[in-house]
Image 1 (cartoon, protein in one colour):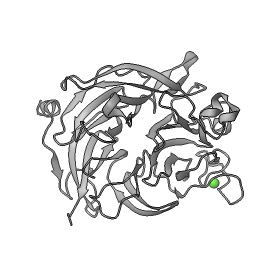
Image 2 (cartoon, rainbow, N blue to C red):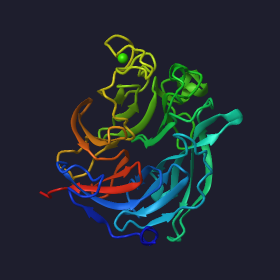
Image 3 (tube, rainbow, N blue to C red):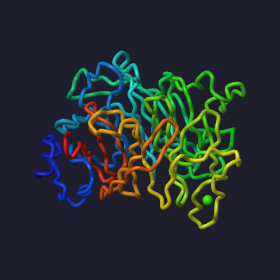
Image 4 (spheres, rainbow, N blue to C red):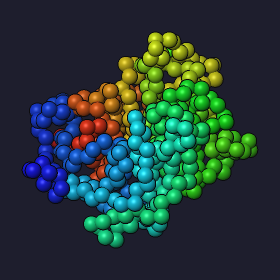
Length: 379
Ligand SMILES: [Ca+2]
């Protein structure tokens, strides 16, 4: 009963001491951990981007099982959003990423990625948008939702959907499309699995894409040869970075360059889970190698490029949440160079990382907690 009331009413943030709860971060980590709220199967979160910020200190959080919440990150108060599309919940699939339109202040549009059912036991990722009506703060509603893009082909199985959204400085929508654990589609130009796509805000191929002249589905492609791409983010200098779950020992941080082939399943610094080898990346093989890779695997579930002032010295760096690694990882980025910097144990599978308006870092644990990270000592 106490727990139920606590969840329903929201609650004042609880500071976890360095030696606190069972999954509190390690004492040596450079941040203080504050529990903000709890969710069921959280998958992604987004603070409103751009100017205006009418949702200051509020974020949207998706739950894989098909729910969308507005959460006040100061108080932890959660409000369910109605009008979310029906999603197929199975395996890794369900409701996925959420993103604010860069013109949200004007058009109130948000984008959602999710998994939908296909014929004969198949499924596939989809992308759509709707208008977020916040006029009644107690009953936020997603209205006029429409699907604008779909994975092709739909296949059986329930893994590697990816479907991560990032808006570029060019105003186009970049979207990851996983290879659905089918390997070869990543190299197949007849389908959009295993690709990074560059789309208009209406889900059409963006003008100027590498294979625009070929037409058809290839006109959507920005890069190909990918596996399970769960992180996608632009750096302040305009470069696009991506994290990718590779096979055993082959997780990657990639710098995404238009038209390049990233090698899956023909090249990987890891090996297949059945023990068979995959040729490592090497110079001259025609494949773009990762800037950073992890063996053993850490299972990168997202990617934040930090732009705040709160954590000194991290500006422009990658903050990577890790599932099997149960860690938050910092990769130092300088231009097109990247190197491992820190790996902070978190004592739990970390599902997502995002940055708040004040530069605090928010993480979602896979088991449901939303945590705020702030510097342990303020300079
Ligand atoms: Ca290999």
